[in-house]
Length: 229
Image (cartoon, rainbow, N blue to C red; front, side, top):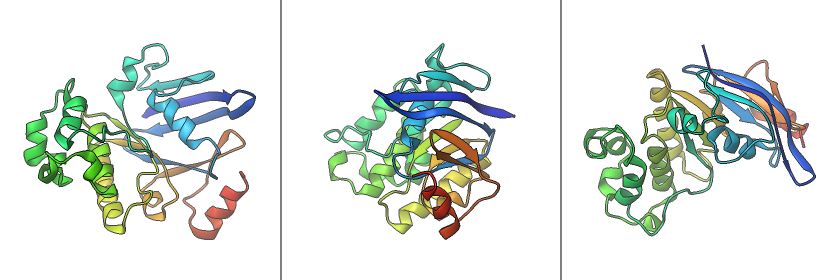
């Protein structure tokens, strides 16, 4: 079953048309990657899928529901981890989490004691301000915030960017468990380890998507991406 369907999405900034008619689908429980050269529109596309940007034209559906008509659909189905830090740096880890858990059916206390927050090691930093955390801990906290509402779809923009190899592996292993439990992932990445867990991959170039016939790595993938520059 297709949990996500994207049809003819278009987006321009002034006279520059970034997305010219993007089409793709994602099945329940799979991980789909969006790859392409820097500046090709990947972050813009993810912002539209997460509801933080408005498309000029096109359609998106989550489980058959249209989030463009009812923006509550975004919150109902999707959690978003942007590449840039979305956290409130002056607040503690726990206060950041309280903000995201306030409308959630999940228990912050339970997750801190034996759930995702414990798994990510955030229980040890509850009272530490975000600005004092390492890059890896900030990324773990960002993911935890996105998961607070227990979304079926996790949208991630370069989740492993600028992180050490240990943190990248921890995120990869968590995503595998998330999908094993029925979660669906859409991500952008240049990391081979992250791309290796994807069942399908789309190349974004010239404002449109092309599904690649197989997972490509190394020089072959780089060459396909360069064709979109």
